[in-house]
Length: 125
Image (cartoon, rainbow, N blue to C red; front, side, top):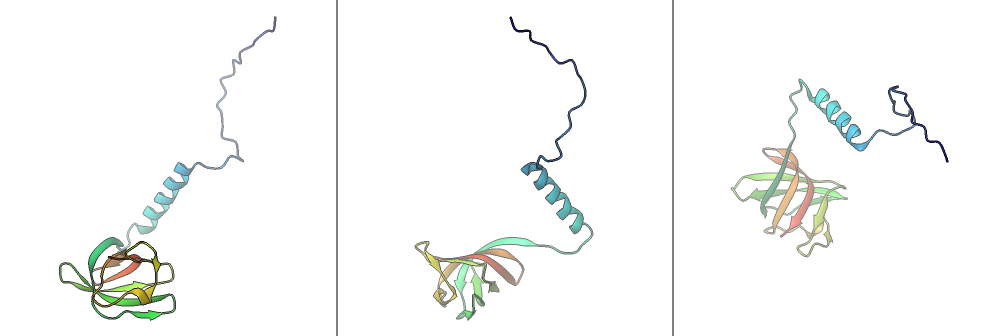
């Protein structure tokens, strides 16, 4: 009969140096780095979603541009587009700056402050 032995070693187990850090640890480290970098600064970044109407004809330049946007509450803000901004037509198909027309209702998502949004997404409604 084979003999089975049990290890009686109580030595601590260490992580192998070639084993990559887990996703949770990387996310925690990234959050800590952002928190430490922002500590003491006066920078505020507000992510927002606004519904409203395109107020003036957009100024389209290359893959970017800008347009005036009247929010549902009546506030007029400036929306800035860049080459990373995703614009969608009402049917969900991709669109571009030239598809944005005065009087068109839209939803804008991005970061900004009281009078501007740097758009990540623009959905034509």
